[in-house]
Image 1 (cartoon, one colour):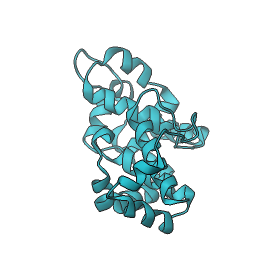
Image 2: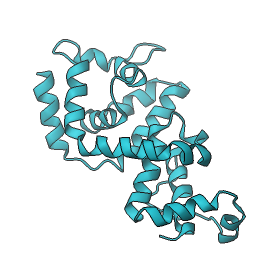
Image 3: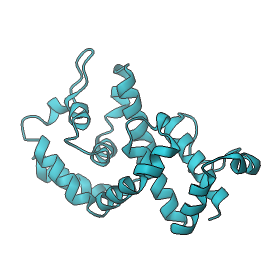
Length: 196
């Protein structure tokens, strides 16, 4: 991957995680960025360095990890990625390698037989408990995405929750879901074992 390709990947993934209509997979990462725009950037050295350090898939994973682990992908600045990006990427890689263990331990910590339905209950102008657990860092975004793949709760939340916090989380769930390739039956089994 050339430095310009790394820059295009950065721009396309930022668009993917911040814009409702842009889909990285649908458009194959294509954007309208120009080579002369890239050469005018003062931070292009960083893209050059990244192109030498990581292969194509690692570059994509690096940016995905940074966009999903920040609070607001729209405000994520390239300088912040330069400073904190490698730590975020390494933590994300560890979670990917132990995804089923992480999911099981997080599910066991927040669910019991009596509170499963209550976790997804919507009350007027209040976040459901499952979202509160995520906001309190009791569960990871991966667990939230997997639960949504199993239960599809976000569509009903989208209709009833009209606040900016949920809108950011909902967009993250929707956009990150495409990058989280899992065996859904395996995770359904884990969920059933923990809840029933």
